[in-house]
Image 1: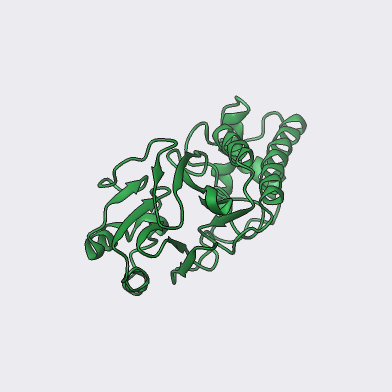
Image 2: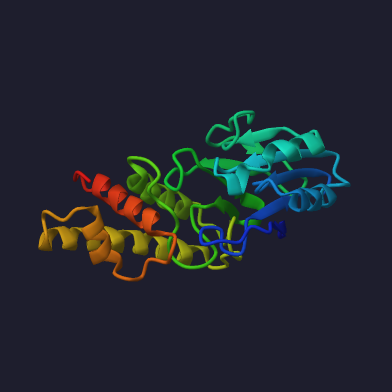
Length: 244
C-alpha cells in the first residue's frame, strides 16, 4: 500500500527537488503537507482528490514550503486544516488519529527541525510521513531554529525508531525504503557534528561561532547555506551548555 505523491515545483537547497505532498485514501482522504502557495500544485491536488467524499489536510509544521498553500487548498476543497503550520489549523494532540479509507494516520510529536513538528504514523502500511525530520537524500536536515532543538531532534529520532517502520515518506526526496538505516544515518551525522564541535572547542576554547564553522565545515558549506551552518553550530553549543 502506497500513498499518492504530488511534487511541487519549488526546488532549492533546502527543498531538494521540491516539496512532496502525499495523498492517502480515495473516498475518505488525508492530504499530508499541502506544500507551497503555487497555483499549479494546488490544482494538481484538487484533481487528485476530485472523487473524494471527505478530505482533511494535515500539516507537519509551519514552514512555507509545507504550509504556504494550506489556506488556499482548504478553501478550494472546503476541507479542514489539522496539525501544525497555520493559524487556522486545529491542533492534533500527540496520538490523535485521522481516519482514511486506507487506514488511520496517527499524529506523533517530533520537534527538532521545528519546535512544533508532527510526523504521521500509518500503521497499516508500516510507514511514517516524516515531514522534515529526515530527508530522502543525504544524512542531515535543518536543526537550529530554537534553543533545545538538538536535544529534541535526537529524542524525536529515537521516538521514530521505536515505531519500527518499514518505510519513511519525507517531504523532500524519495521514500526511504530502509527506515532503520536512514534513522541511524541521521542520528550518526548529528552526533558526529556534536563531536566535531567538542573537538574544535578542545583545540581552541575561545573559538567563536565563525571559527567553529570553519573548523567543523571547512569549505563544504554550499553557497547560500552559511547562515544555516552558523545557526546549526549555535544549536550544538546550546546542547553542550556553552555560550554562543
